[in-house]
Amino acid sequence: MTGGPLREREPAGFDTFHSLDAKEPSLTTPTTAKKVPITVAHGDGIGPEIMDATLRIILAAGAQLDIEEIAIGESVYNRGLQSGIEPASWESLRRTKVFLKAPITTPQGGGFKSLNVTVRKTLGMYANVRPCASLHPFVATKHPNMDIVIVRENEEDVYGGIEHRQTNQVAQCLKLISRPGSKRIVRYAFEYARANKRKKVTCFTKDNIMKITDGLFHRTFEEIAKEYPEIESEHWIVDIGAAKMADTPEAFDVIVMPNLYGDVLSDVAAQITGSVGLAGSANIGDHCSMFEAIHGSAPRRAGQNLANPSGLLHGAILMLVHIGQSKTAEAVHNAWLKTIEDGIHTYDIYTEGVSKQKVGTREFADAVIARLGKRPSQLKPVEYAEDAVMNLAIRPAGKPPMKVRVGVDIFIDRRDGNPDHIAELMQKFNVPGTKLTVIANRGTKVWPNGNPDTYWSDHWSCRFEGDGDGLFTQEHVVKLLEVAAKAGFDVVKTEGLFTFNGERGYSLAQGQ
Ligand code: NAD
Picture 1: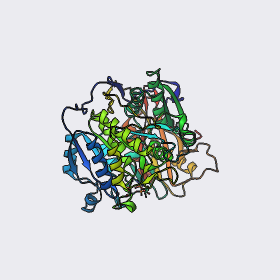
Picture 2: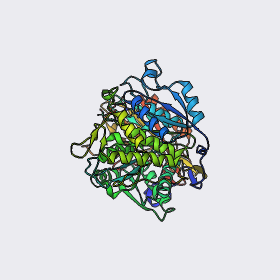
Picture 3: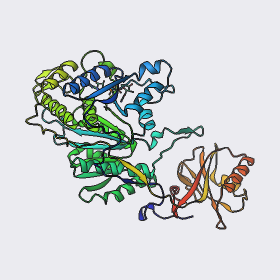
Picture 4: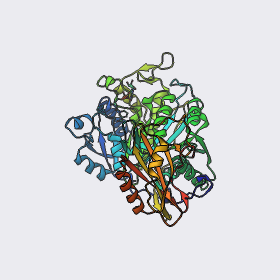
């Protein structure tokens, strides 16, 4: 077995990615010469109202769009389709490759899959980009100088949704982090920073605990950061990083994170700018991209002409940049800033003494349209380069490492188990070329030399490794399972133990 701290060496294995020229037009970035086909879904709850307002604004600003409409969400779920989207809608998405989506209501419980996760993963939208900027003094916030962009990995981590209940007491969710996935999102974050003249990229992980998964993400970050010497880079452990972001967001610029941390913290970031109703997001893939508000369908506000359309409008602004209509995006964004600055506010950001007029969704849209061509005078106007892109065209490359099987973890379900007794039985397995090296319970070593204070659940991980003579093969695994079954063990799963170019690809048990 090869051990040792992973950090000290080059990451062994995994696939690698390289970047194409960031300015190279993406496969999906059409010219502004003709109308660009996009797919639009009006969604549920407040969705239809904010979509109507958003489309009115961007079309009034001159967006050249050829709109295909599809139905998603409640109406589709209610027809028994658990994915919330009809097969024909996929054809539209594959054809247009651009999706402007209003929020939908996800039915509670019972087998329904999140449509967002399904669409993002099915269409390979690996990057989720959420700009969050405060609008001080026009929208109340504790953070007047906040202007950050969260770049969240969008396909991996625990969002594979691969979960199993393995014993009466223990359930698991697989956290999958890949080298190509990490390289792609980290490079995206640096390319985004470079393209948008941002000065710093920060990475949040929890690799003091998850040394292999988050460690891979962090290491990839350190490696790629070297290719962008003009951009400052730093890493924070996610817990203290999150606390710092909530307290002093002006200390950050672009923050790149694995999926789960990004999901949680991008909502925090949006909320502390003043309202979750303000932020939009882009989900970027090599071929298809989706643009939306970050909030949900707010059913309690539906049908009352109350909702703030700003979040979806921001999604649409990012979409206009993506499809090569960045000057239209700029006009919309500046008109929106001017509207906010003029104190014309929906209920969620209306503050007595600061706001001038409380308006509904429709009237807010009318006010933005009336200000097209104007720029804010106190808030900083935005500028989008003519050739700005959202798809930063990053493609895979590289050669695979040398992978060697060195053992297996056999997980068993055993109530009232005792590690010494389990070890005694397993040491009698007598499969030549293998030896039992450690038993762990929920990741903590309990044999050999376990601590009597450790709590034992019914979920035991028993590690067999080679005995030093020859290779550890799949046949060894099969043989061990056969003997385990004969000995009456209830095997609930196995995990292969591998090294990659000699580097250990599995964790040691706590205390091992
Ligand atoms: P939500 O974001 O829909 O609403 C929470 C609260 O935030 C609302 O009650 C409202 O007070 C406020 N709010 C949200 N958007 C607003 C806006 N544009 N203008 C003014 N106020 C706004 O969260 P929820 O109530 O937890 O979820 C409702 C439904 O939305 C659920 O079915 C959930 O699954 C779904 N959802 C969908 C998406 C999506 O489609 N992208 C995202 C999140 C939640």
